[in-house]
Image 1 (tube, rainbow, N blue to C red):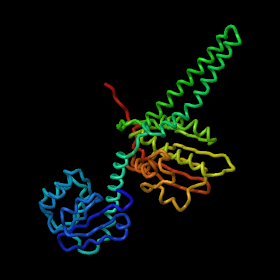
Image 2 (image 1 turned 180 degrees about the vertical axis):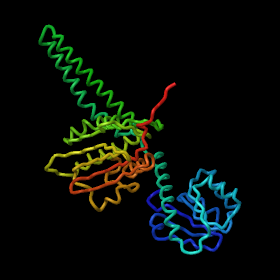
Image 3 (image 1 turned 90 degrees about the vertical axis):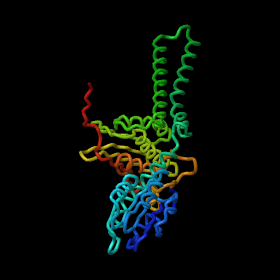
Image 4 (image 1 turned 90 degrees about the horizontal axis):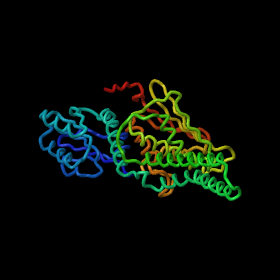
Length: 372
C-alpha cells in the first residue's frame, strides 16, 4: 500500500442497493462491478463488499483461492442466504461480517463497516512496516550513536593513560593510590562503554517475543542511548520514571524504538531553531488505574499547523533521504495502536510540542508467578 487510497471492491450478482457514502470514499477507493473472480487479484485490494441473493460454492472457491495465495482481506457479505457450511468456511479464511440484503439506503452500513476496514488497513500497514523496517543493529544510526557516546569515555581513558605515563616519567615510583584511582576510573569507563554497546544492540535485536518489561528500566536504557548526544548539543533532557515501577507486556524493543524516535525528532527540531532560551526535552511516565502514559515535551518551537495532520501519514518526513532513525511517526503510532492497543497523540501550544502515549493497563504488574 502506497500513497493512493486502498482498494475496496463492491461486487454484485443481484440488484444492488449498496452505495458507498462520502465518508467511506474518503478512506478507500471503491469500485463497483459484476462479480468476477479475476477482479480479486488486484495487489491493492484490501476488502470486498459482496451483494448476492445466495452465497454459492463458486463464491467460496474464489476466496479460497485468494487465501491459498496468502491474501488477507475483509469480506462484507450482503446476502439473502446460502449454504451454512459455505458461509462458515469463508468466515474462517477472511474477516467476514454478514448482513441481510438491503432494502433502503446504505449510509448506516457504511458507518458500521468503516472502523473494521480501517483497522484491517492499519494491521496490513504495520505488518508491511515490520518487513521493510531497517534494523538498527546494521544501520548507520547505530554506528553514529556508538561512536558519539564512546567518544567521551575514550577521551577520559586516554587522558588518564597519558597522566600515568607523565607521572612515571617525572617520579621514580608512581604512588599506589594514584594507580588505584586511575585503574578504577578506566574500569568504570570501560563498563560504561560496554553498557552503551549493549543498549544499542538490544534496540536492534531481531528476537521477537512478547514479554513483561519494566517501564523504569526501559527509560534508563533510552536515557543512556541519548545521554552524551544531548549533553553535547546542550539540551537539558529529563526522563522521569514511575515512583512505583510497573510492567508492560509486549515487544519491549519496539516500544523503546518509539521513544527513541520521539526524542530524536525533538532533538533534531532544535537544529532549525535559533533560540534565546534553554533547550529542554522531558519524557515522563505516569500511571493510574486505567492506563499508563508517556508524555514527551520539547520547547523547540512547536509543529507548524500546516503539517500537524500529515506527520502520522505513511511516508511523510520533514528530513532528507537517509536521515533520521528510520521508523517514522506513522510506524510509531502503529506500534502503539497495534501492539499495545494504545494511542499516540500530538498537542502543540506556543513553542511547546507534546506527544502523549496512552497504554491501557493490560500489564502484568499484578500477576503472581508460581514456581514448582
